[in-house]
Length: 127
View 1 (cartoon, one colour):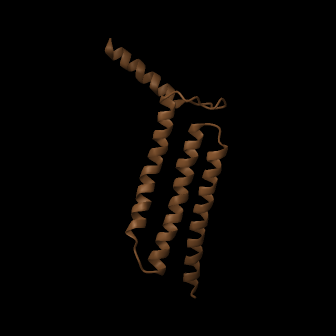
View 2: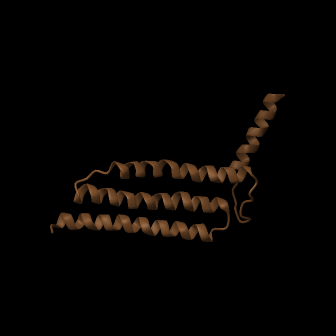
View 3: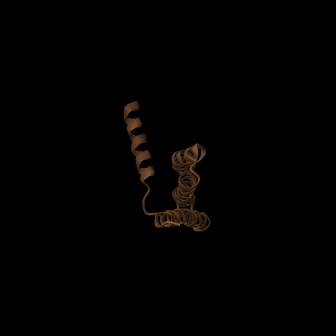
């Protein structure tokens, strides 16, 4: 086994291990965080990065060690990268608009401020 091959294997191992750890931390965040907004953040950020690391490690393994370029893995990487953050954003926005309360220790409500400003602008344009 050459040194380059050994280094490549360690990079793949670290990618997959990092992805597994990030996914586990995301699952822990889903259980422990207090409200839907923080939970959706943990799911969107942690799980997305974790899944992307694992899929990237698998793609690189197939590419370098089996000489196969997997279009399915590339599509999986692209679709997870695009859909997961959008789903997390829409989940939080839907929860906010349906009146789900924020955690009592939350200090900022940027969406509420922006919605009030938009309502005021619409009220002024209607008159």
